[in-house]
Length: 120
Image (cartoon, rainbow, N blue to C red; front, side):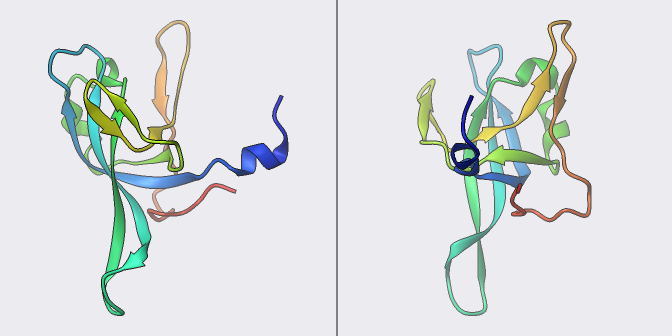
C-alpha cells in the first residue's frame, strides 16, 4: 500500500505520439516521440514551447505497424527518472493495461481532453 501523498507525486499527463519506430534487434521495444504539452520554459512571450520526450516502451508486439500510434493521445508518467534502455534514453512511461490472455489497451483520454492535461 502507498499513501495518497505518495500517489500524488506521480505526474500523469496526456501526451500525443508524434512518431513511433521499432528499435532494431528487439522484439518488444518501440521508440516514441511524445508531445506532453506546454513546457514551463518559454522561447519568448509569444511563443509556446512544448515538452517533447523520447519514450522507450515494450509494446511493439501489439502494434506490428507502429505508424498506427502516430497522432494518438495517451496517458504518460512524466516524472520518472530517465533510464537507458538498449542504449536509448527513455524519459517517461506510457500507461497501458493487459491481461494474462493477451488482451491489451493503451490508456487513452476522450478526444476533447487536450495534450498536457494532468490526471487528478
